Amino acid sequence: MSDQSAKSLYGDSIPNPDEQIKPLGLMDIISGVFSEPVDLFRHLSKRPQWVGAMLLAVVLTTVFSVAWALKVDAVEFMLSAFERAAPSSPQLQQMSSAQLEQTAEMQAKLLPVFSAFGGLFVNPVFIFLLGLLYWVIGLISREEPQQKPTYFHGLVVASVPGLVTIPYLLLGTIMALVNPVGTLRANQIVPSSLAYWLETENPKLSTLYSSLDLFLLAQYVMIFFAARYAMRTKTWGAVLCVALALLFPCYGIWAAK
Image 1 (tube, rainbow, N blue to C red):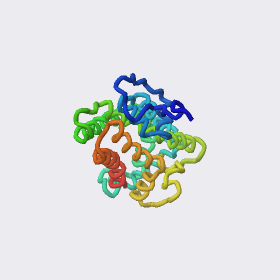
Image 2: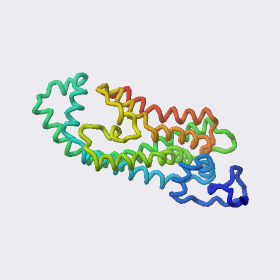
Image 3: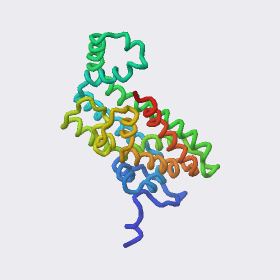
Image 4: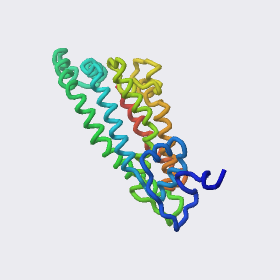
């Protein structure tokens, strides 16, 4: 095999100062996440690219969320949520059954709208804020003091690793469209999630099972690679980025009712 055929699509590991770094296509970035993540993130360190990954993640997440919202038994879903929250909510305790049902029906009609709004607007804001936090970590843990990461490198860490969840989002959308959803949450209908196989009445355990998904766990690995090789942090900085990402599912488990 020749040297040319053995060369990675994403360039050499050691950058050449005279080399002009060409932008990658979105499909190249997607395939790199699954096949050559280290080489991909080394390339993105030299030329950060994140817009396409963020837009694709936003679109797929929105489609999944809306598909679930249109198929779920929204009224029963809301009533179940009210029932779980009632012990710690004096306002819900004072409402009659008729009032609770009326409130559930009103919120059920708005569920697809809220799902679309969350996917199209909340997710990008979250990515921008998370990218900012990753950038700060990159500045204080950079491996080479003379090479400072930019905010764009932080956005690479915040957006590109999410591409590994594309199968999760596509599978979830298909499952929502072809199967009865009942009152299950969106993250309970994907077969790659432990919550799909293990049913429990404990909301904290259910949320924990939902977070134990093959593709979501792979995303944490990609965050480590992205921080380590795209933002060029020290190992402890990459671990800190993963720990930051883990705070959100941990809070979800703690807050589950």
